[in-house]
Image (cartoon, rainbow, N blue to C red; front, side, top):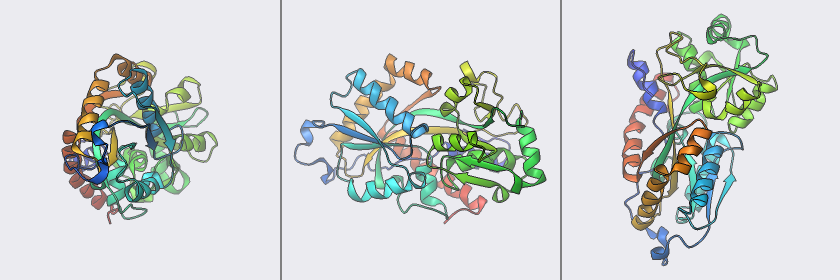
Length: 341
């Protein structure tokens, strides 16, 4: 996700492509316990730090399903949902209680960086407090409205926001200043609207945000496009734009990109797998091997296609380096928006 027209484009694009985990992958701490050589020998729990139905939830469930079906992981893998504060509630508990438990993993995306750096509703914890294991997918943002909405195109929505921002409500599955918020305000911001004037309702996950849209509690939502496919097929929503560099295929082939609509912006959402800070080098190496094999497996390719995701694999070291670089960019973005700590 890259914005190319001016400084703002570069900042925002990189910010979204940018967030998630810690760079302690090479550290051998006390997290491995005495039986580290036998890792793994117990069931795993993979947490989606949100409610059901959103991108994190779908990622966690797809990941565990394919790892189990392909026998890349022999141990049982279960998924649990822990919503609250766009991931901040879960992360606080995880960092303080599970830092030495290598059998508890979680999935995340740019909010892990944004939440740590923003002023309102921030988290004292970020990617440096966990271990990045792998980036596994990339996705894109989208602006959607209910099927019976008066808005048939993005420009009409933006025009109403320009006319009176107080009369248009946008929603998303993450806290103010976080990823869905940024996706929601991006088109209007790039069209000259002060993002601080735009009404935004935050929910704990994309599923809740879509429910709010369908319940007429919001005029539009900004979220990941992969979570919208089933609603589009069912005729419940209209997708006004996608933040990809080019039009997507399949069910989204008729959805225009922001650039097609004259808005010079892109927004890529990465998703990754993270573990506790106390993981040993051997444990990280296990996941390097396992998740690389997953990225090359045909069953995973089919799962990506079914969820409208694109493959984007980075191993633990590359993922950690990526996050370190992106932290600087996210800080610059939030500062420009007046949302930094």
